[in-house]
Image (tube, rainbow, N blue to C red; front, side):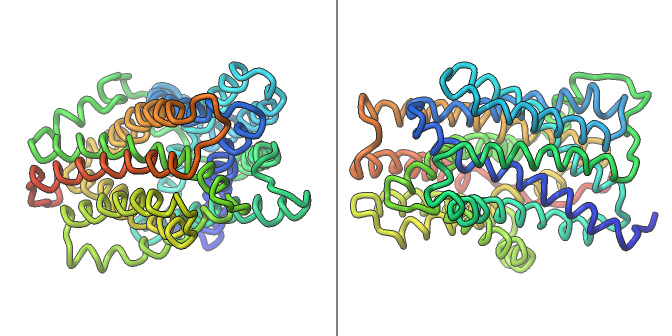
Length: 410
């Protein structure tokens, strides 16, 4: 199969909008919730998101992969999600309904991450060369979302757009646009049509058993554990920036995605010199440094420390998550590669982030008490906890993980 010259740009637009949508609300919703009096509930959007991530593989395996064309499912879910997101700000006076609507939205959105990837892979001829070009537009979309909210919407209203419902309406509008656009994408038939349904394969249990070894279990355990402090970053960095005097909150956070693009391009060079184990360790070390910088900069609101912590996101994400995906791919066989990647997502973005969001929320609320925001000293106390947790995970991995990674051929 050869890829037409116009298809890569079309798929790149799909990927741009896919992550523009996520970036528009994910890095701003906690600021909005704090503004409307839900400051003790800001961990809940980061709880319903991983719940949806856990459910997504079952939806994809049972329905999307077997009965409907990918582009049609993608379009339908984005349109439905956009309609739901338009309703979310209307529930600002009812916290329970607000959270339930966000859950409904995430149940629509999270399956589209796998759908957009599978649609792209199905319609290109050289995955190794073409997919990175397509996927990087997703990161660019996330960056543009943050800059648009902070600098375009902020300028239009003459204030902090993150404190308003505008980011949610931006997400809703972009969702419907991508939904309509999806129907124009190449026809991609369900890849599992006619296959027998197996909950073991859908959940990744078969892949887990096939890959079973001590190094694999250590890798999986540490991947799960490191996602617990990750939840604190996604949830509370935006609130921390506001408390530290930053006004362009979403725009400032895009520094992390900018560094992600840079380190993504540099990863092949580091792989040659470091290998899988040290790539993963450097990624974990970057998490320790990120939270340490946040903690050290909190009492005096030292901008360079806070920005430095955000800029480390490129190493945190690329060196750990992307390297982890490559490790899973190299350890897998052709038959279980898809299951293995899905299982990794379930363990990390699903279970790990779910538990992490609840722990971070409990920690934040215990420090918050009856106040409306944390003091600078309390923010320092808050950030030292995930820093210490990440140190423990890094040491466990460094001591116990021993594996010579060789690519499976069968």
